[in-house]
Length: 100
Image (tube, rainbow, N blue to C red; front, side, top):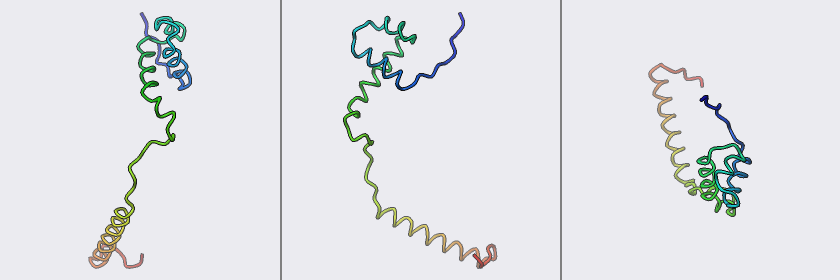
């Protein structure tokens, strides 16, 4: 028995198959035959659809932790000081020209 080459299904196709599975109008085996995919794959897509269904009604943007701008500005200042210090040290050691 030869193996079928790997197929990449579009998100639209996956959604269509998963929605058909969620509706439950046809048995899983029949859906697998109709869409020519393995029943386990349909179960997996259905699970993903149900897992992410709540985000469809959200803001559309994943929630991220707010950025602490003060901390970032402090870090930029720190790094600038370090770079200046190291640049002067390299110039003093003769490893870097003073014309920059």
